[in-house]
Image (cartoon, rainbow, N blue to C red; front, side, top):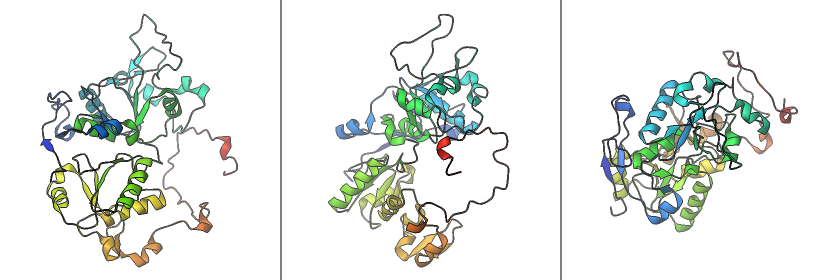
Length: 349
């Protein structure tokens, strides 16, 4: 097991080795810390040192998260040394903890993208200056400009402006995983963008032909995932063809690392559809797909031969989606929202 070098500590710690405060957060808030190091190649591509782990991080959290999840993310960020961005308001700058519940809901509804001249009117937090000048009122507190936006998706009004200003937009996985290993992961591997289907995943493989391995490596990294040459403690998915060998035994006997042993078929299917298909039929031990069976959403096993009857797979004739009909909503889920529809959609609508 020379490839696996792990030290595990159940106590929560900050990047400098000091215990994290867990009294207010409760047991579910503690982060199981992995004491690990990274190779030079991994540091050049995937991680960087930071002490504390969220040093120089100024965050904004998308209020689309539930209150409980919002508070969990915020506590973890602050435990790691991050500070909240200043919120824009008519009364002057306010930090996130002072204005959640008021300025956070400045936008009523879902705004996918704002026009450039609208950003100053709808932006809920301060972005970095793009012209190199910083305007500051001496009578107000210093403005903290966001460096990171935590969001489950890109459907918020400030997204385009964040990308233009160099603000890193990441999912909450970035917060959890950075705090867990005590290093800062490169943010682009935790992107909420829909096209990054392998975002947040760290892949390792064993007993694969070199050509197949290189192809899979390139595909995973192109679509937002990371790759490890060896089985490391931060791996999330371990690819193998048979449930045997010392590495598989390690994964099976150490569920606390959360490593999923999975067939390469899952990645091929995901790449073919450009969307994550359910993992359960491809996961060891005894993957159902090897027996010509898949597991439906209701937990019932289905023969592979009848898969086409239960899954809607677009064909060449229905690539524009005309063959699909959306179900009628049971509740008026848009009640109270104000919608702006782009003129680019006029023909579609």
